[in-house]
Structures are given as C-alpha cells and as structure tokens.
Length: 187
Image (tube, rainbow, N blue to C red; front, side, top):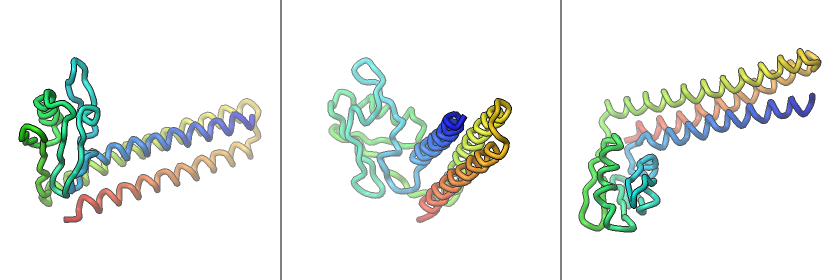
C-alpha cells in the first residue's frame, strides 16, 4: 500500500510539473515588448522536403531589444522562413536583405499590453485547471486505496499532502504570471 501511495503522489507531482512546464512555454510565446528569440519557438519551416523547427534551419537571436535576426544556414530556405513567420500569425513582418531576415518588434500600445495580459491570464487558468485535475485524480486514487484497505487516517494525511503540493504548484504558477504581467506592462 505504501508504494501505491508514493506512486500516486509522484504521478500527481509529475502532472503538476508538466502543467507548469506547459505554462512556461505558453508564456514564452506571449511577447513582452522586448525582442526574444523564444517568440519564434513554435514556427515550423518547410525545408528540404520536410517541416522543421526554425532553429534547426537558422540561427535566431536578438541583437537588441527591438530586433530579432534570423541567419539561415542555407540561403535557399530564406523564402520559406519568411513565409513560415508570416503564416505563424504572430503579427511579425519579416524583412529579408538577402543574407539575414530581420524582424522589427514595434513598441506595444497600452491596449495591446492589456490583451497580452489577458492571454497570459488565460494560460494561467488553463495551467491551474490542469493542476486541479491532477489533484482530483490523486485524491480519487487515495479513496480507492482506502476502499482496498488503506487506513482512513493515512488516506486523510495523503490527501492533505496532495493539497499541500497543489497549493505549492498553484503559487508557482501565480508567481510566473505576476512576473510575465510585470514584463508586459513595463514600458
């Protein structure tokens, strides 16, 4: 029984950590006014007959706070990179000078900042729901173990422990959101 309890707790923690990791990657795609190569993480480029991640066909960096530069390893895929960026619906307008593609990041308006905060808040709510679902699954597992012979006191202790790390993960998500909101609202 003890091993099953540990396994339940471990699985719940793992699911909650996955929710945080997913939340972090979602936040990276929400731009905060400063140029960041991570803004292009999800962009897939058609190259050499396959769809490939942008960073596999080019070097992506941010030489300053308002510019992202993309240096393709092969100039033959420049047009495909440009198309992929335009089709990614990130709102970027790439400029190709023949050797490097540059994306100029315009300053954010107050209205756009508010929209980005709403997007981040939406991502946060999704992550919190994932954490609550992990808690629910773990608690259901504990109840099943209690039915199968685990003492009720131990069951209550395990549920309390699950609630403790649910609170811990929820707090981490809120801290990440607060940091992102601060980044977005900083001019």
